[in-house]
Length: 386
Ligand code: PMP
Ligand code: GLN
Image (tube, protein in one colour):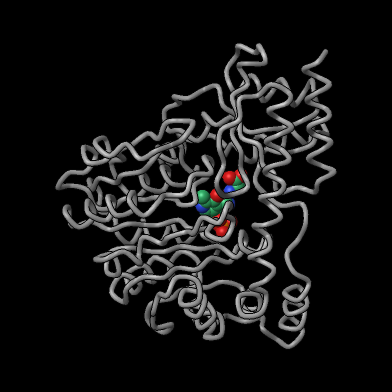
């Protein structure tokens, strides 16, 4: 038979799925794939129920129901002072994943260059390459993951079409600060490019630090695409409701990709998310307080066991170097080892590089009940003590 598309065929199954399957097979405590073990607010479940019973079950408008687009615009204003017209600058997508894919498909022409930071979320590179982009990688280095300014500048060229960035950043837990964002914005303007900004963890941020959307910086309103996810904001990862904010010209281009990818997103879910954005602000801002406490709990415990834990300022991911424990295999070996032998699953950070570089870090997901985190820590402590 004729071969399928060679670019997608060259990628294996996503590491999140691989590790979760392994966790299920060995019945472990799964701190690998990132999903909370407690759902978001009851009021949005109730609204989903009402919306379903009241008949929000047919195709909604392509850009999303007005109620949700208005709620997204109001959310932009409330948190970031961003004034946008909900009719022309906001679109609802089927998860942030679709918002990313639609933005890439709308902008990339074969042969364009796209700049990304490593480590990175696993959908970026396959989608960029499938769209025809040549991907330029800029590596952030642990433990602080600071922006390597010279390398970033060197990655831009007249062929650069866009930069795709993620702040707060998975898996590093890094939050790009104003100076770093300003530097990126200058390059975006200098090279006349776009910026796709994956901001799905915007509310999961700690220590009083504020998330700054790139789109709020001077000159970025016309060039940046801001992407969010109800899955993250409301701890409902299966809902796959995302949002995208961009200038009208950009938004209408991205909407063309959206109309042929999915056309629209479940209307009952949209009503529930609109309710959440408007009425559950306390819930999603308190989530960060609770996650910060869990971060501290896990950080202290892992340090006590002997891991070298990297700082984590946001998201629900923490990275740790296991070499001080005396394990000298790769991160993939380590993850299999602790899954099978200690009953705890974590994620190899090297899987979040296009060409593996750092291979001694593992990612712990800490949006889990305290007892679950404690159980994982107890198992690891007992295992490494023996
Ligand atoms: N971007 C990043 C950085 C993520 O970690 C995730 C997590 N799933 C997504 C995008 C996808 O979000 P969604 O589930 O809304 O598609
Ligand atoms: N974003 C989540 C993570 O980084 C999971 C995404 C997925 O399973 N595709 O773990």
